[in-house]
Image (cartoon, rainbow, N blue to C red; front, side, top):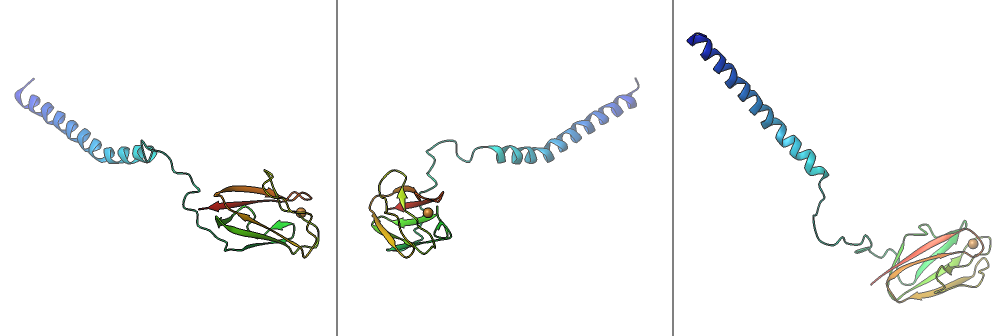
Length: 143
Ligand SMILES: [Cu+2]
C-alpha cells in the first residue's frame, strides 16, 4: 500500500465517524423525546383523587326536577356543599321515588307534582335510584 492510499483510507474512516456522529446527534433528541413521553409523570408521591377540587354545581336548596324518567339534566353529576338540602320534584307524568342505594334516605312514592327533600351533612358520594324504574343518580357532597 502506497503512502497516498493509506491517507485515502484514513480520510474515509474519518468520514464514517463524522457521519455516525451526525446521525447520533440528530436522532438522540428524538429518541429522548419519545422515551420521555412514555415515562411516568411522577416517580413518587401519592396520586390525588379525581374528586378533589370538584366545585359545587347546585345551590342550597338544590332542586332536581324529575322529567322523562330522569333525575334532572345531569343525573350522576350533581355536586353540592355539605349542609345542602336537595329537593326532588316530580315534574313527570308518572310516579317515582328517590331512594338511596345504601338506605340513607328513601322517599315515599312521589305522585306527579309531589316532592321530597333530604339534607346532606357529610362529604361523600351518594348513589340513588328510583324504586319503580331503572333510573339512577349520584349526589356528590364536598366540604
Ligand atoms: Cu321512577
